[in-house]
Length: 396
Image 1 (cartoon, rainbow, N blue to C red):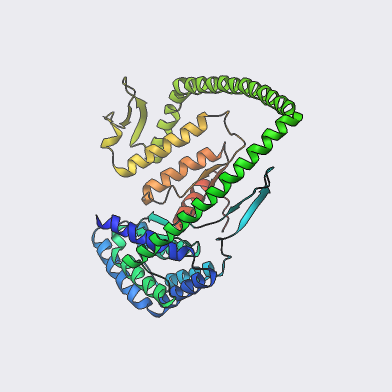
Image 2: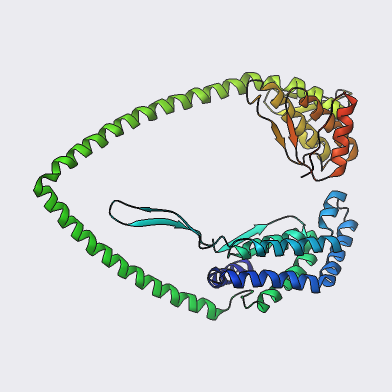
């Protein structure tokens, strides 16, 4: 058995205890995590300082380095977030959408834990605590895998949170005895389910007898009428399904037509946008005879995207995205274009070019861009001002 399989086995065993822990114990554990992170924040900051030093020496980009770094203020924010999670209503155990079936059976939905959540994330130490806190509040055990650049920070956070769980009387992991107890519980549950099945089977026999008596009393005719009605509705559903299939084929044909005709039209504006973003260093985007993408620079050197730098590839990708949106003039014209933090990974020179392209697209389409970086906001406002437009900034 591999180490990962062993972690999964122990996490699964611990999940049964956590799933039944109750709101008070889970909130106590969250408060204990907040307390221990406050008490021993120096240890966490020291481990993080080692990660930051190693990442800086390895040449990590400033934006990524900022995400990796912990400060006194950020630790305080993480602690406050854990306390806010503790104050939230417990999502587990809530029952909704109760309904009574014609046979008297009452059916509803109840929120229960998933059991074990495996989460992979980048080198952001705060995510280690955030993910663990949310899983704990929802009664789930978590297996966390953060970026290798934050290994010391993540290990220290996990160590402190395990101590907090022990303080609150919850298992940081599980033992063989826990697994054996869960196995015995499963056996008892199985016996109970078998007993319930026998009861339901007996009830089914009784219902079959009642049905037989109803048929003898003349209820069979009503059943036949209901069956005929159901058959009629089935025929109508088949007709509707055939219409849907026809609409699906027509839509697929329309998409194929657009891809063969209109998509090719996007390469001309993409070429112009790429030239705008690169200050004329790359001037043309086109397809080869085999249908593969290629780009041409100012001295007519043709290259495949795989031979470009990462930054230039990102500019090419953004140019194609914007060109496709601009060429699809009949699709979603009234719907704003939502963009994530697409400029944060560009260096300053490339970010300026990309901002120009976005401002140009904004002349015909409404664009809403989400960012948490001041330098991106400054660049967009400057690019908009150069063409006589205003960029609206909303602080959330």
